[in-house]
Image (cartoon, rainbow, N blue to C red; front, side):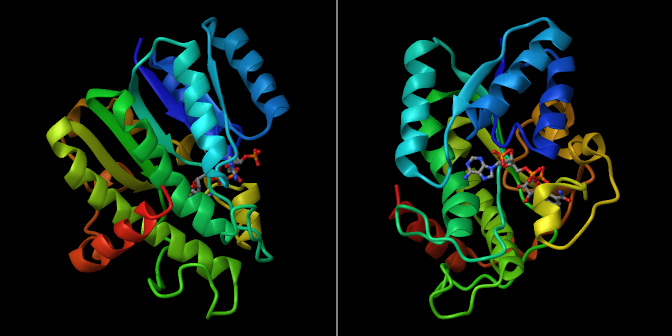
Length: 260
Ligand SMILES: NC(=O)c1ccc[n+]([C@@H]2O[C@H](COP(=O)([O-])OP(=O)(O)OC[C@H]3O[C@@H](n4cnc5c(N)ncnc54)[C@H](OP(=O)(O)O)[C@@H]3O)[C@@H](O)[C@H]2O)c1
């Protein structure tokens, strides 16, 4: 069985991702922070698709929670990972400082993606695929103020910064994991009405299934075998201005490594 771990599986796009990949015969590990929601989703999918689903219970705000969830998953199940879809993100309207003392969007959207790849690295097999669900709604990254200590917090700005960072980290990880034949790409999903999109003040004109199309395509498509370090929209590679500045990418990667 090819196992794919999907974070934010209980969310709008995440649950659609799980359904699409279920139809394609992958084993799905449902990532989430809310045990009841995860149990309900697991039950629904097991009934619908008649196969077992694993659960990855972690609050991505916390390094310890991520590490414990990985320990639980791999000590209880003899599996190796084929795929990881880093999809969980949040964008609280008011600034939240996590228990680790980090600004929440930096912790979840940036470090969450980075930590998942770093800590899961040893469980991937050759030809594995990692997908970072980012956005076209990205920009204004300030490496000297990643946690809004100098700038006043605005959830939209912090979100756009985090989505730029995810696209930059994609380039860095792709370079590092190439020799292990692990391929890393980023994408814009689609615009679907969700808690997150509402927190940003958007609605969303696409269905969850439409929004899940590109993230899932990047897992199953044979057309992109060995493609790595790219940014996709609607299944197509789009030139990414944030992939150009290698020095900035390296700086961001080094900063994130300090939190591992
Ligand atoms: N919707 C859009 O139009 C749109 C556009 C561009 C990009 N995206 C990207 O698509 C991805 C999915 O977004 P969505 O629209 O589906 O949002 P959503 O419905 O709000 O789902 C977000 C998911 O992330 C989980 N999550 C949030 N904080 C977490 C934490 N600290 N630890 C663990 N899980 C956490 C949520 O868990 P709970 O269920 O427990 O809250 C939920 O499952 C995001 O990366 C987003 O940036 C979305």
